[in-house]
Image 1 (cartoon, helix red, strand yellow):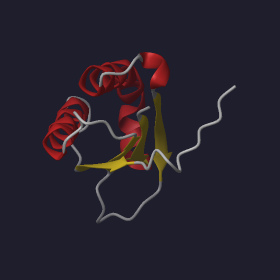
Image 2 (cartoon, helix red, strand yellow):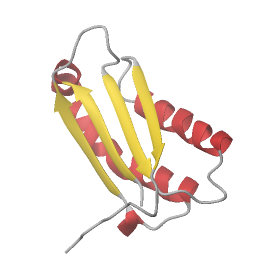
Image 3 (spheres, rainbow, N blue to C red):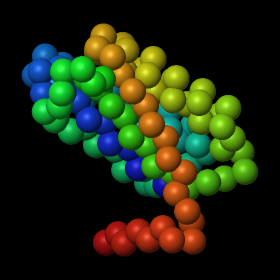
Length: 111
Protein backbone atom coordinates (compact mmCIF):
# COMPACT_ATOMS: atom_id res chain seq x y z
CA UNK A 1 0.00 0.00 0.00
CA UNK A 2 2.47 2.63 -1.03
CA UNK A 3 0.93 6.04 -0.56
CA UNK A 4 3.24 8.60 -2.18
CA UNK A 5 2.89 12.34 -2.21
CA UNK A 6 5.38 14.32 -4.24
CA UNK A 7 5.36 17.93 -3.08
CA UNK A 8 6.91 20.22 -5.68
CA UNK A 9 7.67 23.87 -5.15
CA UNK A 10 5.39 25.95 -7.35
CA UNK A 11 8.30 27.49 -9.28
CA UNK A 12 9.64 24.02 -10.13
CA UNK A 13 6.13 22.81 -10.95
CA UNK A 14 5.63 25.71 -13.36
CA UNK A 15 8.75 24.70 -15.31
CA UNK A 16 8.39 20.92 -15.19
CA UNK A 17 4.72 20.01 -14.65
CA UNK A 18 4.26 18.01 -17.85
CA UNK A 19 7.48 16.07 -17.34
CA UNK A 20 6.63 15.34 -13.70
CA UNK A 21 3.16 14.07 -14.57
CA UNK A 22 4.64 11.95 -17.37
CA UNK A 23 7.05 10.43 -14.82
CA UNK A 24 4.29 9.18 -12.48
CA UNK A 25 3.78 5.80 -14.24
CA UNK A 26 7.51 5.05 -13.93
CA UNK A 27 7.37 6.15 -10.29
CA UNK A 28 4.55 3.65 -9.68
CA UNK A 29 6.37 0.88 -11.57
CA UNK A 30 9.44 1.40 -9.38
CA UNK A 31 7.36 1.25 -6.19
CA UNK A 32 5.49 -1.86 -7.35
CA UNK A 33 8.69 -3.66 -8.30
CA UNK A 34 10.68 -2.78 -5.20
CA UNK A 35 7.83 -3.17 -2.68
CA UNK A 36 6.30 -6.21 -4.43
CA UNK A 37 2.80 -4.82 -4.77
CA UNK A 38 0.36 -4.43 -7.64
CA UNK A 39 -0.54 -1.06 -9.19
CA UNK A 40 -3.96 -1.12 -7.56
CA UNK A 41 -2.27 -0.92 -4.14
CA UNK A 42 -0.62 2.42 -4.97
CA UNK A 43 -1.81 5.96 -4.46
CA UNK A 44 0.56 8.50 -6.01
CA UNK A 45 0.03 12.22 -6.39
CA UNK A 46 2.14 15.21 -7.39
CA UNK A 47 1.17 18.39 -5.58
CA UNK A 48 2.46 21.90 -6.33
CA UNK A 49 3.14 23.79 -3.10
CA UNK A 50 4.55 27.05 -1.80
CA UNK A 51 7.39 26.54 0.63
CA UNK A 52 10.39 28.26 2.11
CA UNK A 53 13.33 28.87 -0.19
CA UNK A 54 15.85 27.08 2.04
CA UNK A 55 13.94 23.77 1.99
CA UNK A 56 14.24 21.05 -0.68
CA UNK A 57 12.14 22.07 -3.66
CA UNK A 58 10.94 18.53 -4.22
CA UNK A 59 9.82 16.43 -1.26
CA UNK A 60 8.63 12.83 -1.58
CA UNK A 61 6.67 11.44 1.35
CA UNK A 62 6.09 7.71 1.10
CA UNK A 63 3.93 5.82 3.58
CA UNK A 64 4.01 2.04 3.49
CA UNK A 65 2.96 -0.90 5.59
CA UNK A 66 5.80 -3.00 7.01
CA UNK A 67 6.91 -6.32 5.55
CA UNK A 68 9.83 -8.52 6.60
CA UNK A 69 11.71 -7.84 3.36
CA UNK A 70 11.35 -4.05 3.72
CA UNK A 71 14.51 -3.57 5.71
CA UNK A 72 16.19 -0.23 6.35
CA UNK A 73 18.72 -0.97 3.62
CA UNK A 74 16.00 -1.87 1.11
CA UNK A 75 14.01 1.28 1.89
CA UNK A 76 17.12 3.47 1.73
CA UNK A 77 17.93 2.01 -1.69
CA UNK A 78 14.34 2.66 -2.75
CA UNK A 79 14.59 6.27 -1.63
CA UNK A 80 17.79 6.73 -3.62
CA UNK A 81 16.14 5.17 -6.69
CA UNK A 82 13.18 7.54 -6.35
CA UNK A 83 15.56 10.52 -6.13
CA UNK A 84 17.44 9.37 -9.23
CA UNK A 85 14.19 8.94 -11.13
CA UNK A 86 13.08 12.47 -10.23
CA UNK A 87 16.53 13.82 -11.10
CA UNK A 88 15.81 12.87 -14.72
CA UNK A 89 13.24 15.68 -14.70
CA UNK A 90 14.21 18.18 -12.00
CA UNK A 91 17.67 19.26 -10.87
CA UNK A 92 16.49 20.95 -7.68
CA UNK A 93 17.30 19.49 -4.28
CA UNK A 94 15.03 16.53 -3.54
CA UNK A 95 14.21 14.95 -0.18
CA UNK A 96 12.65 11.51 0.27
CA UNK A 97 11.03 10.48 3.54
CA UNK A 98 9.70 6.96 4.02
CA UNK A 99 7.42 6.13 6.92
CA UNK A 100 6.38 2.63 7.89
CA UNK A 101 2.85 2.66 9.31
CA UNK A 102 1.55 0.64 12.21
CA UNK A 103 -0.68 -2.04 10.66
CA UNK A 104 -2.66 -2.33 13.91
CA UNK A 105 -3.82 1.28 13.77
CA UNK A 106 -3.84 1.87 9.99
CA UNK A 107 -7.30 2.24 8.50
CA UNK A 108 -8.03 2.68 4.81
CA UNK A 109 -11.51 3.18 3.40
CA UNK A 110 -11.87 2.95 -0.36
CA UNK A 111 -14.92 2.89 -2.57
